[in-house]
Image 1: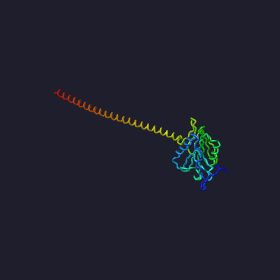
Image 2: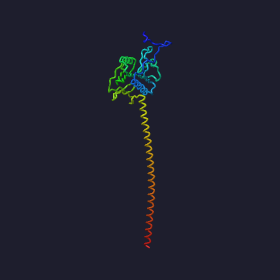
Image 3: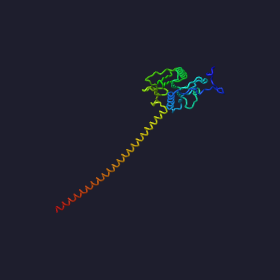
Image 4: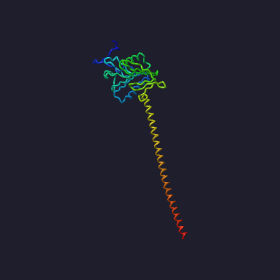
Length: 266
């Protein structure tokens, strides 16, 4: 057996399943950003479910006793397994549940032979949906399990909806690849989400300021209305007093006329 094919064992004779394959998580910023975007947003999507595990660049060992059979998907989603720390995903310790959804993000260093081996690996070990995203060529490819084998997804309107995740992946008008939650929200990087939150907070603060200004103007209008009402009441009172005075004068005039008529008769 060649040295590279030897299976490492511990002092007690137990098989060692390495937690690293010595390869970097990503070869460039495009690939890294896509992995972060997928893992972060999928975790957010299933944050309220304790039975959905979303991980990135974690070694997956599907066969007990053979650590040579392994790969580390850029992103994988496992339904039916709890969240929590893992040094690797040993399937036999996870209820023999294989990841159902896998994403690979291509980098310039990915060879077609390597991607073919990964596709065969995922097909053999139970993956239901497999998506490759190429950030350089701005393309994505999807394979769906039909029975025991993969069938490539045929583009229909250039948009794929994952039956298991509910997310949509499509080609945008500007040529970019878009990924969206079931409610239509785009998958964003943490800094993009922060910028959006800051913008939303700014708009909320501006709206609050405008609301305070409108309330102040409304209070001022009410105050002016109260003043106008008071002046109107005061004027009304004066008019009422003047009317009473006129009526009193008129009554006096009538009385004097009556006296004159009496004196005239005498």
